[in-house]
Image (cartoon, rainbow, N blue to C red; front, side, top):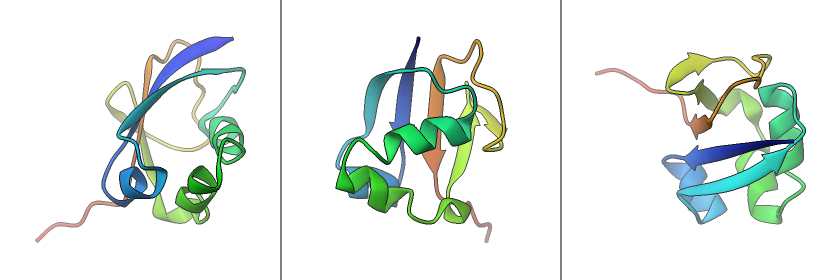
Length: 84
């Protein structure tokens, strides 16, 4: 079981009502982690209701939902960024 620091930014932070949390997980990929997180509370389920509107970084490197979590310490979730 791995221990991960999960960071939430922007509207994800607002929906979950927390900037971060520490979780123990057996998830192998980011998608597996999200599947676990949505079972934690209705707030988590609402935040991840549309995964296409969420981006993820593993140890501060932009990644995909199929990325493995092996060796990862920090997972950050945030909305897509726009320029301008």
